[in-house]
Image 1: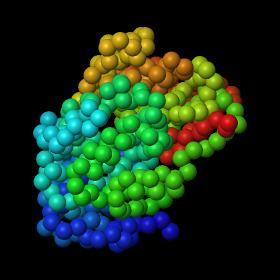
Image 2: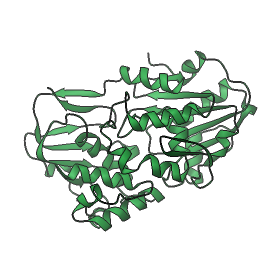
Image 3: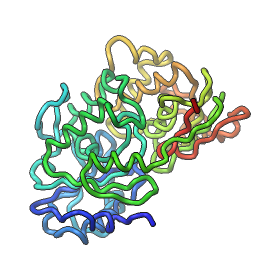
Length: 358
């Protein structure tokens, strides 16, 4: 039986002193309220000074969303502010700015989900405090084109990954940190952030090996990432920029996502949309010359890399005009109306990606 968060916490010692907790926003498919309920039963409730939603540069959660996210706990919950951070050090040229409420706590507990991630290899671990609760300069520098396009930075890769190594070194410098992580659909784990990611990544069945390359593929996006194109496009780039995608040159990638918020409403999403619009129709300008700057623009770089080899359409889209305005083909038609035969269907690219058997 999959471990519950309560069972995962039973295996480690209760921290002494004050505690600050980081939790993900609605873009992660994780039961945050369940995790906080377990922490409330495990910790001395008076030791918790704050619960911070790690937004990065995503949009702030409304009061209603915050209440739903945190359930019945009585702790103070706040949206992270990337402009209210403290600089703690510089790692490999990246200035590390962190939410001051984390710096002042004796222990940081980061709640997250371990699943495939474009840059960090797998999400979770120290990514919660360093990126989710990081400062504007940290987010911009860490997502600069020189880093996200480094050969070592790959979805599903931890060892030798430049992006992951910066995050982990920065996180280790923050002091005592406990990771309470949902491991895909395998239950929960708790403990050291680096060990949790390393062990859990080996337990997850993240790859599915197939025998042929396809000319078209439907990528179905889970509900937590369907709200806007910034998030939904991850499913397409995870596949296209993986080590061995089972796609023929010029293959048509069809993303099945509502995108009711268009490109997205947060600051990072708006920066992404502006860069896309300014560089259309030939997005290859994003890959050479002066790199776009600012958190969120890296998503445009990933899409430009995808479009070097493949085509992209968003289907089942509720706001296709908003995506067409930034140079992305979009339609309200179902994805099945656009594919050829045979085609490949991916049900959740964040938990399991097909790779061409070699």
